[in-house]
Image 1 (cartoon, helix red, strand yellow):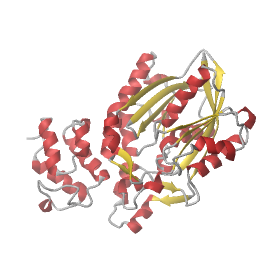
Image 2: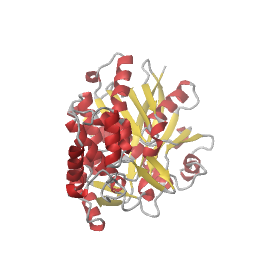
Image 3: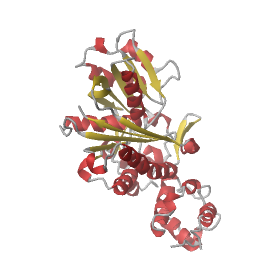
Image 4: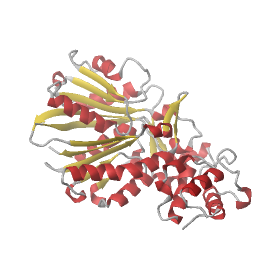
Length: 81
Length: 310
């Protein structure tokens, strides 16, 4: 399954327990305090489930601590629609 | 040919036992039920202000040496990255503190979670070339001294401890076999900067889940063995998330896959020998059992070893 911006934002919202309305393309660990390393692992694990194990095979996504960066990596790996 | 025996295993934990649930008192926004689902860790142990790597190593070694003739120790090897002093090495100071022979070989190995296996490989090589015969091996770290109180990722995982044992040479037609992997490009994923240890958990997780299955399968293949030929798997006790994933991926039966992270947290290089000590205590190891020891983490570094138990 390819991931959309909406799906990514929904996952982030669910993991971080932050309203979807408050998350946009510029959201990331710099402006959401609860987005720490453990939260990042949870976000990636959820995205991984949706792509049937493809996300957690991408080493560079581990440092993608923003919506923009996650989309950039997924686009590169052709996992974004 | 030389094999090695590991005996007189002991360990000590930092003296402050902390329930992970209690972290919510200082950090009310931490949802510890959610955190524990990932880490699986219920308790961690912190060293107090009087305990450092040297002190914990001394306490553990004293227990190890109670039933071993000190005069036979010809080498001291310490695996640590968090000694109070950068110099001198912990192994040198321990020689005096434990009143061991002065004509000992001493070495500190600067590695974390893969360190126990690197130490065994080093000792195996020493034994093969008759440099040493009986080594006091210690693995110790005090990560909690280098953690920020608001670091949810590290504070809820790492424990301070020291594990010690005697590793001796013995003649055998079977040698332990090793496999190693290093990827320095992930150095920033677990690093000490300005006296604080920081971990990018997802980076270490991705490295581990990608690297370890290949590392193990390659070692098994090279030695004409399969997962079913291994009697006990003793992995570095990183966290539930990591170990569950590896166990599933490698299809390791639960009765062969040993864990204790839930009770004592992640003790870095000491975690493998502490599990080993528990298996011995519970009489779970039998002569000629094949043990697979697997370490991974800071570096990023990984190592595994198949050892025939004696």
